[in-house]
Image (tube, rainbow, N blue to C red):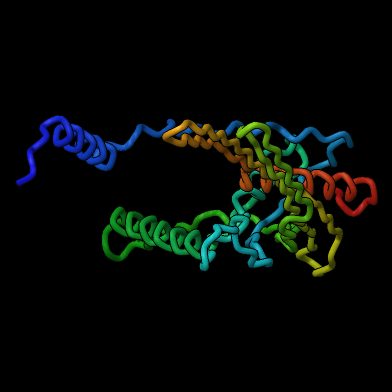
Length: 266
């Protein structure tokens, strides 16, 4: 019969409790932070009046998947809907250039306006005079503003690992390695005149996304044992922030070129 060792049992129980605590009580995450939108400074003087623009959608047409090292890669490399980034870029423009109207959710907007019109008419009928007198005219909301120019943006290309460099060395059981990878995606934006359907202008911008992976290891051999230690880390440039900067740069270049060429005028 084997003897019962209390120290070994206590150590195993403590390890189990510690692992259980890690599962039920995860480490606190960082507090969410609101990103401050810096104004896009325009060098050309603003037109006589601001143009009214609409944005229906901005999508990723590449379908490039984010590498995960597994057999299935379900997440896309860039956000599939980049409309919020375009709206943020338009809102960041210097006042006097653009007026933005809602078009991505225009169906919901029209439905809400119908509900508001019914509510206004119901209130007017409830306050109508006695029978035999003319009813007050129906009340209506103001007409929606019509966009003069449509801004259409899309991610048209995503090239994975356009630049890759790896290096490593080891001396006396101590070594290190590193990998540097650069991806490039291309964003395109064009302006279309609502009145004629003409493509007024188009701008294409490329942006690189950098990833860096570093690691090190150490080995030590004793007469009766072997010790190995390994340490590594990786850092990736946030794709969302890179896409936001690219959209802002493409919109700024489009407006500046339009003012210079003369088709972007109020």
